[in-house]
Each structure stands twice: as structure tokens, then as C-alpha cells.
Image (cartoon, rainbow, N blue to C red; front, side, top):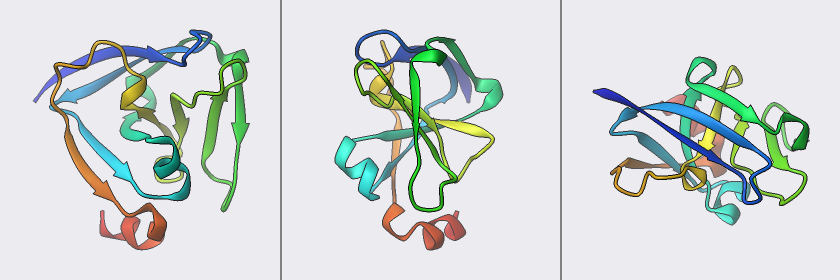
Length: 124
């Protein structure tokens, strides 16, 4: 597999980042209460694969349930383009739909049963 990079961010542009990923990337389509309502397609990245380019001060944090996941939203436009997931607390989950210029990339999309998180996590 060869590697690729892309930049992305929130709707208003206050938050921008760069992420490296495999080609083809594997995305998780989660059915949990947050992801299903927002259409978030997860690209899991390590800390080394993710670089926040600007906008750290524009992010606000939302936590629920176990409180482990750090859902990071732009304070200006409300978009969650990435966050620190419960499943990978030392990395990031990037919303594939928040990346620029990846229309020609054909990701592998796998369903993830986030409604039954513990069982789905154990099955990985």
C-alpha cells in the first residue's frame, strides 16, 4: 500500500488539518447516535499521521457517555471535522467528508456497530 495525504477542515475554514492515510483508505461507517445523525465517515489516524494546521483555539469539546471521546467542534460553524475517539484515545478520527480533493480516491467502507460499541470493539 502506498500512502497519501489530504488537507481538510471545518465549513468556515477556522480549523484546518492534514492527515496521512493508506491507499486505499479504510473508513468506518458507524451507526451510533452521533455518527448516524451527522454522517461522519471515520478515517482513523495516529497522532503521527495527523497535523492540526490552524484553529486549535476555535475548537470546543463535547463529551457524553463514558466521557472518553473528545468530540471537537468548530465554535464558529459547528462542524466536527475530526475528534479523539474512544476507540483510539491516542489518535484521531477524521471525517472523510471534511477532506478536500479526495473525490477520486476510492475508500473501502466497513460498517461499524457503534450502537453496540463494546461488542463491536471486541470484534476488531
